[in-house]
Length: 257
Image 1 (cartoon, rainbow, N blue to C red):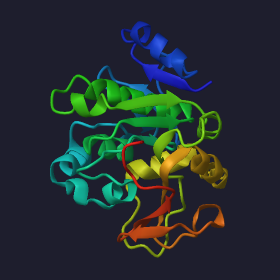
Image 2 (cartoon, rainbow, N blue to C red):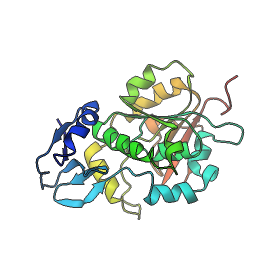
Image 3 (cartoon, rainbow, N blue to C red):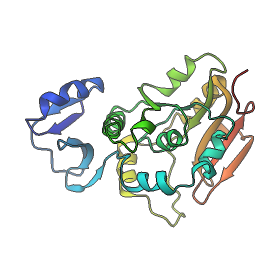
């Protein structure tokens, strides 16, 4: 069982939270090794490298890069907005089936989308739930995160259980290899994230259930030069500097008849 390390005073308040994700709670000193551990300092949950406490992953929707993008990121002009089909006429609901740290879910919610965020990895889900909880207390972003519903389960199982054409858009962002030719280095938090989560080796299996559940389209975020998911060519792609959005169009993105 993965342990969540904290001070003794915080342990009683964290047990119910930890139980929801199958985590243990330990008041022992966090191991000082090269592995990553969950640690709560009384303010936020973090994924911390034992021998380098400054190397950490915290989900924070209220400050830093996420806040900057919310304020200056381009709104409906962003590639992700175009990919999912956000328009003045209709804002689709989105299932983010590979939520991860919730960054794209938050961007979509900022655009006005109601988002069902699905994450199967318990450590990642715990980090995201903690970040959403803290954001719900912040007046600037509380309304935005209220549009995100986090579900801790397998996206494969969740999508397979949905009726055909029952959700507007399914969004997939499986973990892909960093392109060594790309000049920009992977950020430290994403390095930690990749080390804990690893590759989504079964991501190809998501495309079929996603296409079945989606009413309007499926959007897959890929590395700029990566092969299409499951080897299936999209209807079209929107390509940026480091990644692209493959769009599998099924119908116009508009309100259901």
